[in-house]
Length: 315
Image 1 (cartoon, rainbow, N blue to C red):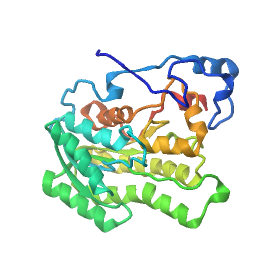
Image 2: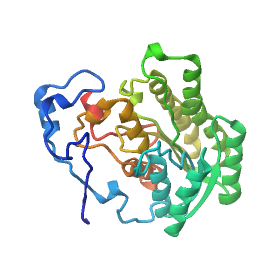
Image 3: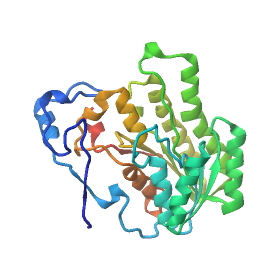
């Protein structure tokens, strides 16, 4: 294992150093017993393994696979020096592991940036622009994948949006907008791609631990992400006759640009005690996706795979 890189400070406190007892607030599910909280506040997780940095050696785990990814770019949210997001990390990692990629995003420039990273490393990726709110654009993106790759061995839906916090802040427009992107978009992508999925193909949908616990404080977001589980289980059952697998990835607190933007709106996000002592990285999410799309997960379907450093065990 190579050298490890220190984590940045959180709220001005160097990673791995003890925090004061009043500096953490639970996001959800009550308060922790003080002895457990004290242990979490002093845990030393100042270093990242190479997988979490996107620097681990590759082993052609997806060699020859044809992967269609919706949400392959990322929204940098005007964050200076943004970390890599889940979708971009997945796309780059899959290419490193030997896959051919069609990278779809609403922001074509961002998808092109992701593909440029891949091609600089000698991989193969084609950027495509599509808005998942538009069924015609989804169909067109899937047709591009068919033209370029001839079929689909792996399908990723990694798109989501939030809205106002709290039930009293709900509006019909914001509710419908979130559902249209987070849940309806996933269903339309599945419908469009379904005929092209090969025997033994794998589907992975990015959800959130907010689908299992009200951590985001955004009811439309939490409900939409919970709905993905029902969609995924249906796809797993219907696809089983063709050995198609479908699973959900449920990240916890991940250090992405969108995560940092969320922390600006909700300061307690960065002060949540996590058993492994740190927020995850986009690469942590990507490695779960890599497992699910690889042959190593050939007997895994209909599951919600949590990537949260143990956060959900405290609820």
